[in-house]
Length: 107
Image (cartoon, rainbow, N blue to C red; front, side):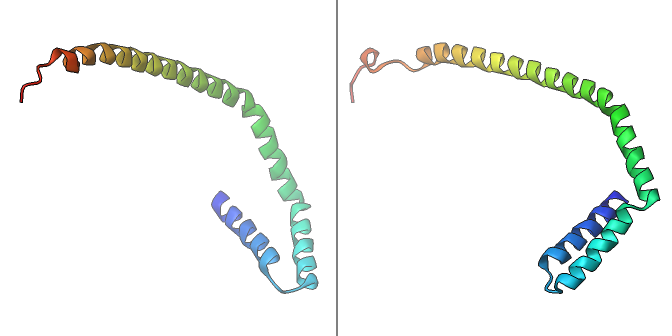
């Protein structure tokens, strides 16, 4: 249902912005939109949606904060593991690749 309404509104806006129907058609669409928005049933549903969002805002805030904290700790752990691996690899690779001074140059 939400997708259909979005499509309808997007189509109406696109038509108004892209059409060459003129000012008269624009005013007609504008008055229809105003009468739709001022409809008591639409206003009731808008108020219900607003109240629902206000009720759920603290829950969403807590979940978002928890997810952010979890992501931050996972990032710190990954960065620490990467740092340990890089510092460990640099020590190991120096022993695996001898310098030119320690090799004999016979061909």
